[in-house]
Amino acid sequence: MEFRKVEPGFADMARLDNLNREAFPPGEYVETEYLLERAGQGYFDFWALYDTPGFTGFMVVVPHGDLAYLSFFAIEAGLRSQGYGSAALQELPRIYPAYKQLVDIEMTDEKAGNNLQRVHRRGFYLRNGYCPTGQFLSYFGGSFEMLIKGGEFELEAYKRLVASLNVPEFKPVYFTKADFS
Image (cartoon, rainbow, N blue to C red; front, side, top):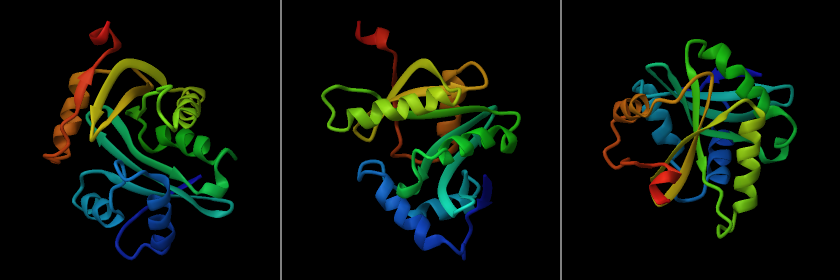
């Protein structure tokens, strides 16, 4: 798996943009141009993923402190469930060797129309070495579970990462399941 920085003039921008639009629902979708602009300002790393078939997907990773937060991750629809996503996740520690890998995923919810997809996504990350942190958050109308790989989760470190993004409308609410017991 090869990671290439996405920068202005990126050759596969149309494919990346189409994948971005297809992979993320309206509440989670962020315009590709905005991602490109913010990456250019140093807020995060914007990666295109390549393997034998060529362009396979993309990632947005926020390195901050000792965390590498996987903010966006998508594999081309026709290449999913063929090992490309796992290959990309296995490459992250090579690119970010001194970082714990962190991701948030939609919480499983039997009432959600896409619960089966959520269950599969959670299983995918668990199979790839991520562990539940016991920490959850909600933002932009959704609730998410935080998973980590490579160390212990520290909520204060994540809060510093969020503050570093300088996105005033991103105001996550943090909770644990014990908060609702």
